[in-house]
Image (tube, rainbow, N blue to C red; front, top):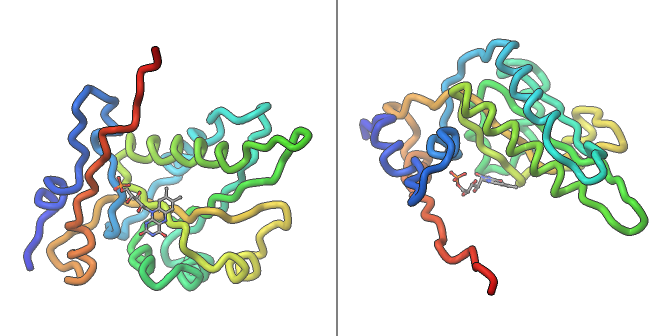
Length: 193
Ligand SMILES: Cc1cc2nc3c(=O)[nH]c(=O)nc-3n(C[C@H](O)[C@H](O)[C@H](O)COP(=O)(O)O)c2cc1C
């Protein structure tokens, strides 16, 4: 099949009913990236966006490890991904998002806070023209061992980042998954009396 980026965008790009910021209209999570180097200034901006995310008590309970395509650590991360996530090998960088367990009494917000930091990072990447796909399916204990992750860092999500891939020569099975539209539910907000 000779599919183009335009055809993918037609299916996958959000169609909001109300105006939202540009990055939200542009964002979706592809499984096919252009294996092209991301310049370090863009990478720094992407992480800087995460740094200024809100967090409970300003604990900032997150930590990120990242690796460039072609590096040994990149191959190690790929080896820890579930079989259906191996498409991530076309990404320019892989980011391992970790939470740090921090409590006040019995209360904790660390998973929520990591999510906020990740979304901030994803939107900054989108602003710079890079797409992301978050992946929760990976072998955590293998990853911790292979990457020598700090004991206090809990890998929770792996994020593949890169420019949108060229769809003309994509594997057919992967293309079928990419053509799957992601409709959104409409019943999720209620105005209270
Ligand atoms: C915490 C989290 C875990 C996810 N895990 C996976 C995963 O393991 N594999 C995968 O292909 N996509 C994964 N996704 C991507 C979602 O399937 C995707 O965001 C969702 O279908 C909505 O599509 P969109 O991001 O294109 O709008 C994950 C997303 C999140 C936020």
